[in-house]
Image 1 (cartoon, helix red, strand yellow):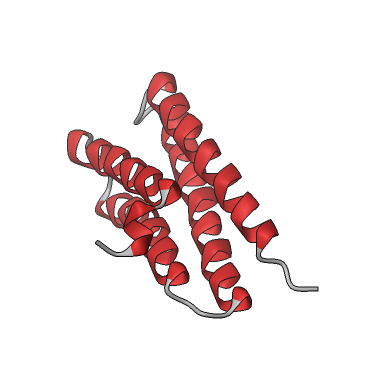
Image 2 (spheres, rainbow, N blue to C red):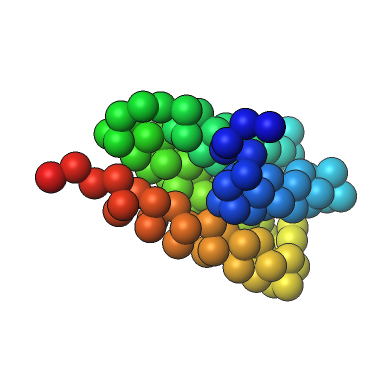
Length: 116
């Protein structure tokens, strides 16, 4: 097992990605929406893994910033889907709760890697 697989944030990112994929598979979004949401949620998982493999604080921090930005991208996509009534308010709120937790954890990780 790789060290990043033991990280709580990695496990939560996989859960969030699974939630997004579940929405994609159960709804009738456009191909573009499926691709965008799927890629953005997968990007969170992959950037956490890649960042954890970097040696310098600045490199690790950069990947965690990208992962957090992908969380925001997913929330924006889900917010639009909610407004278009393609997902329910409950589905959006469930995703938002997961995303908020991910964002907070990543923010702490980013702050801890600041170079002076």
